[in-house]
Image (cartoon, rainbow, N blue to C red; front, top):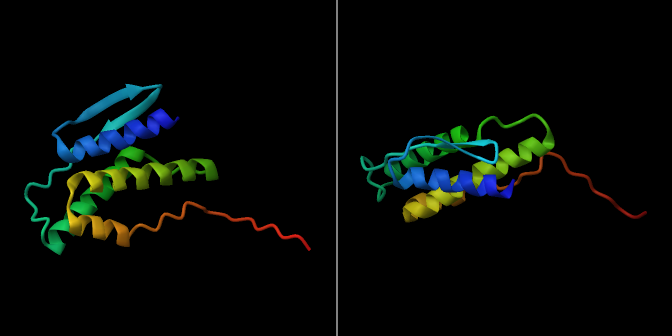
Length: 119
């Protein structure tokens, strides 16, 4: 399972930097690759960074698939999504894009919480 998550992150990262498209298979899991073009953007402007951030988010939604219905599936999807976005943003080396990602970086994966207290 960890191998699959790592492969997903690498696929999104590779897509952000190279022109690779298609589908590969590893450990019975489909790993999608997405090409994210950003040569048309000026990443030194907020508009350019925001446009690339939207593209990366859309690609992460595609790469990670459906969110799932159970808490475990939701957690796995959230982890895939955030790790993929974070890794792709890091590979671009844009201060504005990194700042934008940190601003949207609510990494709370919990959809439920139980609190125990001794009386």
